Length: 177
Ligand SMILES: Nc1ncnc2c1ncn2[C@@H]1O[C@H](COP(=O)(O)OP(=O)(O)OP(=O)(O)O)[C@@H](O)[C@H]1O
Ligand SMILES: [Mg+2]
Image (cartoon, rainbow, N blue to C red; front, side, top):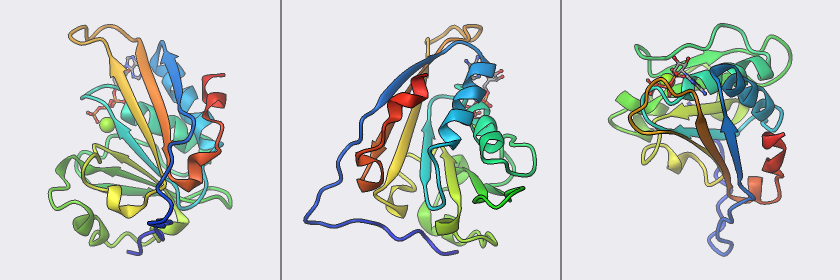
């Protein structure tokens, strides 16, 4: 499996794009946020989803898959490390990765032998922190927070930050619309 070309230039440190903070009140709104996020994405993009168990990472990815118009229901890839959802149209496929059990990090991911090239795909990684950053300097970091302890509370605070040149001038505030 081919990794996307890293746009790293040591003379030009990666800059943080303008971030967005969004309050989400329900699973439906989280899915809607995923659909909005999909509009900003193109082939080669890496989205890292972080947040505790049950925060809503897979729910967001479900909306993202809908927004991208890909085949197959996005579910928790608990028993597989990565699942490829091909586009139903002519858009990029969605590669949904659960890095939780990806002990070996990137090498292991490159050995998965997905039959798509990562540079042609939108890659969404749950639990990827400290494991997949080497893929590219251009990353969208999505962090989902929820009130600690209260598992019935549906309110989530989502922070989206763009890293690297790809996102330096992107307007992420459209996500809060
Ligand atoms: N605002 C919300 N956004 C997303 N999910 C919510 C929200 N409120 C409640 N939920 C519920 O929380 C659960 C989130 O599950 P989900 O699988 O998306 O989380 P996850 O972050 O992917 O978990 P894991 O770490 O196990 O992969 C679902 O049961 C969903 O219905
Ligand atoms: Mg999940």
